[in-house]
Image 1 (cartoon, rainbow, N blue to C red):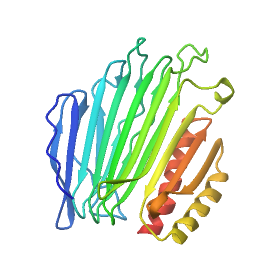
Image 2: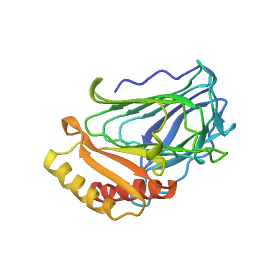
Image 3: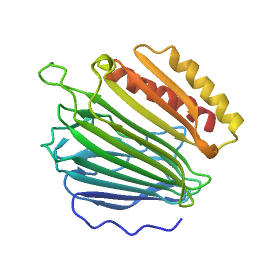
Length: 268
């Protein structure tokens, strides 16, 4: 995989992880407002060379008109996990304004990425445009979570204005999976399922193996409280996609953790 040039624009995040011996090292760490990055942690006993980074935001929220961009690059054999400090608020945007977030993930051969940010909290009249672009080498593995929940401080069931999401998975630079969503507010009869999310388990395998994992995940998730979930095969044998709708954020988080651990055990 060709290494990307580091980003230089303000208000962006650019991290690169490389494998050195028995460990993964954060080789490039470029960040500016609102992002804050501290040290890495070795938390994964089942994957000793994986390093965890907790991404913090100084502002704690994003507003209408804000534009954010992240890029994570994992070189061959590296293993990294990105977490966030907590759920991030997306506040209202004035008419004609949007909040934009672009995330680029590049995972080389033999690398392993857990990209697990906390859900976005969409406040009334929020307008979020989100793009997630994943460049996955043939033998790379990635768990990529994306979720949002609703919140009205007045308890008046006011909803966000719009949510546009575009997720693309590429192999050798060619798109193999594209998922687009364009939601204008939330229908009121869905309000009791206020938490929604997805988990991409990108682990290229024979379709028969992936189908068995998907059936196992579906059965495990059906038993979870406050949750509606489904698992399905992704095209070109690149992995499994899961969708969640939950009554509370804790149910959504629990489902994501459960699905990830079930497949992680199979892979390791």
